[in-house]
Length: 384
Image 1 (tube, rainbow, N blue to C red):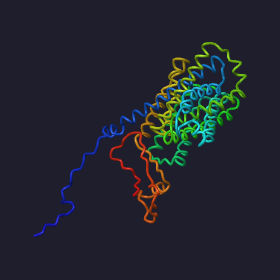
Image 2: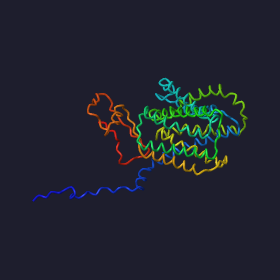
Image 3: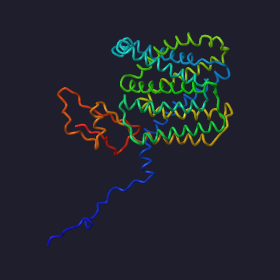
Image 4: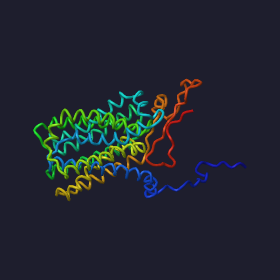
């Protein structure tokens, strides 16, 4: 007599046990992710050092020379990286690069110079809190530029992580307001706010272009071209706009050390940032840089006797939490527009009416970028 088994009578196969919360956290907090977070904080510490030297120059010695300070950095880049390109052979030679794309690097050099100038200039017209808050405008601009020009595709968790980082900045600005840290308040506050927004937009353009160059061309090429065009155009700007300010500077060994320190920190920042960008992305780097103001505040507790507030610690932990959340999942970059069309389709499957690739045409590809390895996660784009 045949026996018919119902669904309920079929013994269930015991699957793998559900991982605990601790195991999930350990799987996400990989060594690569922690290294990436540490590299981002090194960049933030360098920016903190740059801010402190600038503050001493402006407040203690009345040396308001933002363009000249950037000019010294570009000169160092020129001496190290541009000369390296000059002695190279082949397609990576300085002359070969200039023949192919000199005008692109000229525009990028101008963008980088004016981004530094606008943000530093804004401190004379608006409040410190406004600069901190509006400088976050770089985050949505980088996200948009990466989406449309680098063709990066994000997940919901990336936007949540970025939102947490911005929330942390909001807590920091709130603490500044409660404690009355309103340095830099001027009569033309709206003008200063517009300078910050303009500088943040230019920073975003520069960072996205830098990411593309270091991932597709060369880190040395980018820095060498910045040194060449940056020193040339910033030198002209110094001669036109800051020659009188330089004459007013009371030059002595202390001011000289501050200028040397500022230039060294800027040089290290420019040299190290392409390394981090190649490992991560412009969005991840700019989110990491949001902690720079926190380090400046902690230094200010000892150097300038700032008042302490628990909101600063809260904002720091919120930003770090946002960085961890952003880094736990990967972004996807497709190299062919047809791939992006399929990425947007439900199920991420190729449509039946898509024409086959003709002979001699390279297959579209997808680059899988991650801040840390993700075991068990499949790339949601499949190209036959």
